[in-house]
Image (cartoon, rainbow, N blue to C red; front, side, top):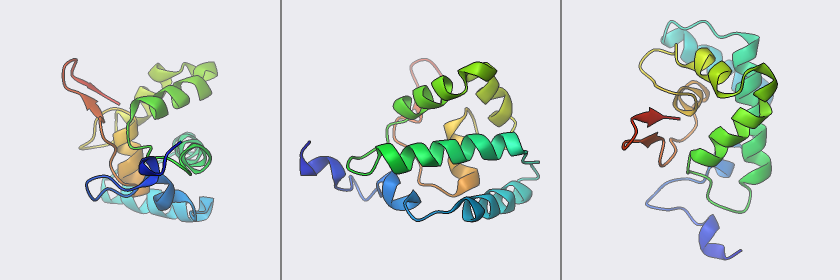
Length: 127
């Protein structure tokens, strides 16, 4: 692995830097505040998925830029396959106002930086 992978790109902050010191309590407080602003009811299921993704970022994004969405969506689909995978995740997060997909609303609610390639414009898919 070379050092260029851990350097910021175009002024973007790597995901790891945004999450490395976050606690579950801080995440929950931020998510609940942002959800209230959007008039969205957050459940324990939402918080579980959000915390799982943040733990994934802490473990897998320490030494490289992790701003491409597809690998994180794949992680979540596999982690929640027992509940229906992508279908379950889309049902949970597609209801967040003014967002689309799964990762976009999670990042908005948790106050995380946006991901590159968050949408596949060729297919009209939002992760």
